[in-house]
Structures are given as structure tokens and as C-alpha cells.
Amino acid sequence: MQIEMTQMSSTLLSIGGIFLLGFAADLAGRYTPLPRVTLLLLCGLLFGPAGLDLLPHRFIDEWFPLLTHIALCMVGFLLGEKITVSAIRERGKSVLWMSVGQAMGASLLVGAVLFLWGTAPAFVLIMAGIAPASAPAAIFDVVKESGKKSHFTKILLGIVAIDDAWGLLIFSFLLAAASAISGQGGAVDAFLTGCGEVAGSIVLGLLIGLPMAFLTGRVHPGEPTQAEALGLVIICAGSAVLLDLSPILAAMVMGSTVATLASHHEHPFNEINEIEWPFMILFFLLAGASLHIEELTAAGVIGLLYVIARMAGLYSGARLSAHLLNADPVVKRWLGCCLFPQAGVALGMALLATDRFPELKDLILPVVIGSTVIFEIIGPVITRHVLNKISNENK
Image 1 (cartoon, helix red, strand yellow):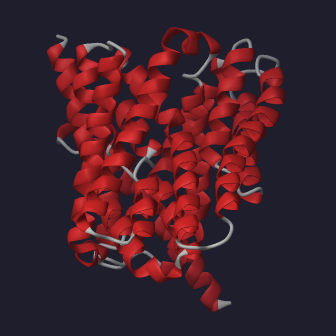
Image 2: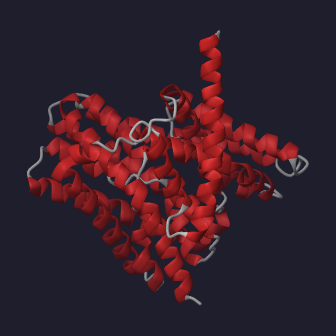
Image 3: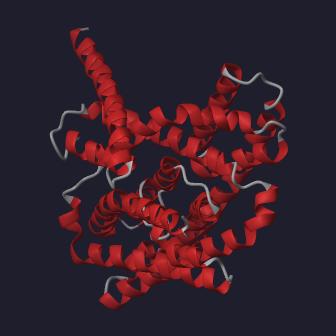
């Protein structure tokens, strides 16, 4: 009993301390070049196992997976509001092809660089498949924190919203190719599994979004709408986990369905927007506590090549596709720079790849985890810098 009380008190103290750190990060983010996302990640590194080790390991292990799914579903739901039928008609072509361009750019350049370096073909294909994965939560929060609404931010959020769908398809295809060239069975199964995850996530989002669209506008604004929205978003998260689907993609489709079909559709989005930040504080700080800083050295030269090639691929792919579409000069110049953050989706892909290729585990995991530390810390900083620069240029 005494042990349980001690664990409960340490958990409550940790949650209270994390919220106060989130408050401090929000204040500091207004007066420093660092966005609050990066500040929270750094706080997690400082107070987590890699730093002062003040956060209970049990708390990190049990809460982080749960909060990851809830936070990603909230982000996906809010992003879905940007992808209505009218929005697709307005900028759907540009968002679609620029999202394809940046994803293919990252995949092709990472694959080419690692191939020329002489790494194993299976490793080349796996890392090329992981490269397009992004961190929608980090990018979304930087845009939200900046308070800037423009044609550029609409394009950026539209791309971020569908980015993981392309990432899952590219990864599934390249993982299947890696299995085929390695003489393993199940190459077709690997590809079909990836396609099934994307299709299943879309169907799940529609199944939950349709009744939600019916309820929205028939429920009084305020606490009733908040309960409805939060309940269905968390049900979406739980269903996605149960069915081994993508929480953020399913939630995005759910949000898009509500925004397209519902009258007064802004009510549930406003309610989720109001309560999202506490969840994001816990998510980002625990994400920082879960980072393994020692993996930076283990990643070595291959990790550095991966980081440089991925950044160059995202930038060149986004710029080329924007140029072909005759997009605004601001979009051509800066879009790729805002897509550098990479987090949990990439790690999930890496774990899936190591299950199929256990002999590459000691190479894949250090590179992905080590690069995640870099992308999660510097990526939001670059995104915020770009948004500020664009804003200043337009004044």
C-alpha cells in the first residue's frame, strides 16, 4: 500500500510539474527564438533519463504511448478541418502534388546517398522508405503558436495533413522491395499491409465522422459539444490502435468529414482546440524524455548522411514540385524548410523494419533515433524562423 501511495504521489507531482513547465515554455517561446515545442522537448531531455532523471520511468513508459495516440488524433482532427471539399477545390491540386514531390524527393535522395556510400541494399530501401515520414504535431503547433494565417500556412498544413499517408505507402512499397531482394517471403504481403492500413484508416475516419457530422450542430455549444468531440476523438484513437491503423490519418478523415458535411461544424473544432494544449504539453515533454541522446554518437557518419540527405531531399522535392505547379515564390522558396521535423511515425516504421530484418537492427535504430533527436529539436526552430521571415517580408 505504501509503495502504491508513493507511486501515485510521484505521478501526480510529475504531472503537476510538467504542466508548470509547459506554462514556462509557452511564456519563454514568446520572447526567445525557440518555439515552445522545442523548449518542451529540451525540458524532457533535461528532466528525463538522459538528463537529471527526475521523471519516474514507469510514468514515462505507461503514459507516453497513451498520450501519443490521443495527441496525434487531436492534431489529425484539427488538420481535417482544413481539408474540406471547398478547400480541395481551391488548392487541392497544388497540395496533392507538392506533398508527393517532397515525399519522393526525400526518399530518392536518401536512397541515392546511402547507395553511393555503399550500405546494404535492404538498408538503403528501408531508410528511403522512412525518410518521408514527418512530425505533424510539431509543425501544427508551431503554426498555431505563431498565430499566422496565410496562403503559405494553408498550403503547409494541407501537406502535413496528408504527408503520413504518402509516407506509409512509400515505406510499405520499399519494405516489400527490401524483402524481395533479400530473398524473404511476404514482400507482397508487406505492401498490401501498408495499403490496407491507409485504406482502413480512411474507412475508420468516415465511419466515426459521419455520425459525428450528424450530431454536430444538434448538440448545444460548450460543455456538451466538448464532451461529444473529445469522446469521439478518443474513440477514434482507441479504434485505430485496436485495428492497427494510423490514428492521425483516421482522425484527419473524421475531421474532414465533419467539416464538409456538418452545419456549425466549427463547434467541435473550437472545443478540441481549447483543450488540446494540456495534452500536447504532456506529449511533447514525455517525447523529449523518451529521446536517447546517446544514439547521436551511435548513428555515426551514416546518421549524418541520412540527416543531410533527408533535409536536402525535402527541400528540393518541394521546390521542384512548387516550380512545376507555378506556385507563389514564397512557397517555392520556403515550403521544404518547414517540413524537417520527424518523430514517432518514423520510429514506428523503424521498429516494423527491424522485426522483418533483425540483422539490421543495430544499424537502423541508432540512425532513426539519433536523427529524430536532431529533427525534433532543430526542425520546429527552422519552421518558426521561416514563418517569421515570411511575415516580416509581407509587412
